[in-house]
Amino acid sequence: MQQHCASSAVKLCRKILQPHRVASVRPPPPPPPQPPLQPPLCDIFINHCGVDTKRTIAGLLHGHLFRLGLRPFLDSMNMKPGDKLFGKIDLAIRSCKLGVAIFSPNYCDSYFCLHELALLMECKKRVVPIFYDVKPSQLRVVDYGTSSAEELERFSWALEEAKYTVGLTFDSLQGDWSGFLNCATDAVIKNLVELEDGN
Image (tube, rainbow, N blue to C red; front, side, top):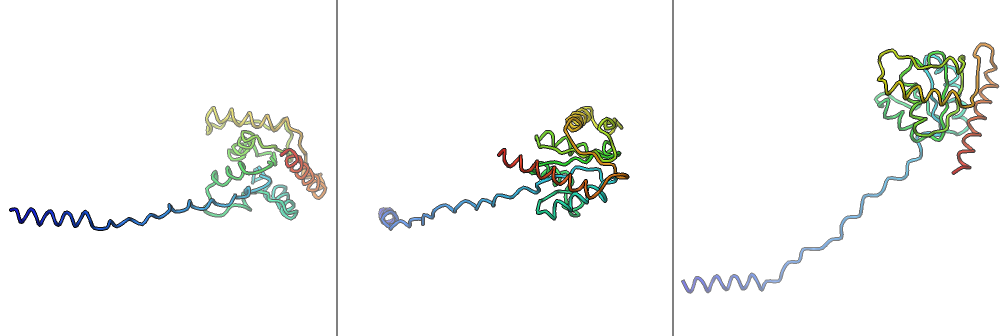
């Protein structure tokens, strides 16, 4: 028994006196690199009713601004199959510098148009209204029973804000398309310059 205890004590002493293996102390890994600051998705968000304007004023304005080196956002040009509608559009609205709202005869029938306009206003974006084949007094939110009372109120508020903002008017049957595109582009550029100067 004594011999067993002695042998256990020797083993214990050896264990205690063995040089401790010091765990290699490594510095913590560096934090992951911050992603580079993403530039805004667009400079100008074009809010429009596709059935009325995508192949006419909205598409032409997008092309005109793009050729000038600006970054306009038009859903049919900037989105691809698989993109989430609200995800991509809402991100573009939040990151844009300026909104262009093209009001047209069927504009107020579109939930998407009204949602985009409301988000532009809620994000306090400057909006340049274009009244295309419609007068401001003709624009009103209609309750088709598909939107909640809160949404209807939100849409009506945004529409009233836009209606009482100085904008451009265009009659597609009698207007000068080339002259109007130049005028709309000038309005967009002047507003962008003002916004840049204000920052």
